[in-house]
Length: 434
Figure 1 (cartoon, helix red, strand yellow):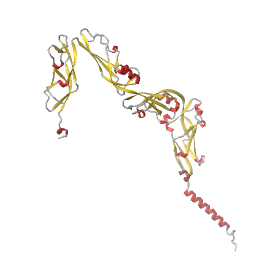
Figure 2 (cartoon, helix red, strand yellow):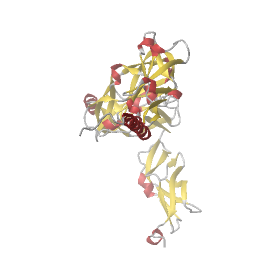
Figure 3 (cartoon, rainbow, N blue to C red):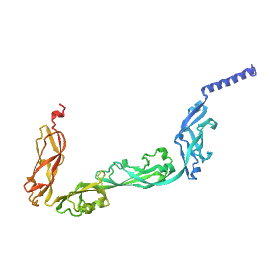
Figure 4 (cartoon, rainbow, N blue to C red):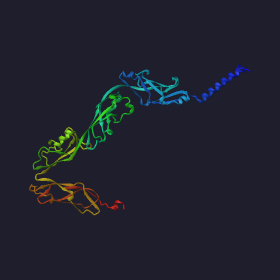
């Protein structure tokens, strides 16, 4: 028996409609239409050539670094999106005018699978300034910090290639630049031979001596793509170099030059092979021009400080950390006088309590001795006696007079003093706190 398919058609149609409605309800309840906001911090400015041809550059306001993009769509679709799925651009050619300050550029956001009418941007415009584009050249300073080459070697020079760089950018930003530097301290520490560091990173410092931020750096363009190679050249070190110093002129009548001394007596240099070989031929001695110290008509010691680095011949330099100060002293005494060094260990100490100990701060004291007959040939330093005594011995540091007794026929030109340090005697019990 055949079924009648046409029976109850209205009821069947109603069932289909109800089913569709139920399906729509379920779908809308389970996957509703929602709106979600995304923060975009990298709005791309396009068609900058539009103002570049006018000799201008675009600078974005620091306060307008981010925009918020709102996307409307099915929840399941929207929830799968991240900020990286959204692209936001500001087209300079779409700006209403480039004669205003700031210039307002419309922002357009796109997202794959989302219709444009379902995307909203806030704010709708990007605020920028147009500045004159300028180019300025800067020397590249290279530093190695506290780094040192291998033992026996010294970093003689650090040379950048190129030695200068051209920087192009907004006029106000380029005007802030004070210096361009490269730090290769981590690359040259402990090196034992000439070394080239490739693609060293430049640091830009402003006039407040602050390093430019990455945001400011993004507006600058460098020739050679900002790549710098640095060559470190090494020299060998030689120590115990002496100074031979003299003087010009004559002392006052009745006075003579006893000696010429320098502080320091010796120092270290680094130099090229040629310069060190020449120095060796001179007995590892630097001979100074006598014109450095004039003693004409002087009756007292003459001391002069000069810059040692300025006196070194080409190819030599002071080693790192060395003082450039050199003191030259010309000791002037009356005729028939001479300076002798007396060991402090031969000074007799009197009256020092048993619970105290004393130490001299220097190894020798100077005795300026004059012969009554003007002849010092018979003077014997071993015949000199020296002593030290104090009324009240207490802990501390002192400069104290030294009593000097000379053989007959000789006198001291100046009183003698010495620096001493007095301290408590230590023992095992006091050291252990008992």
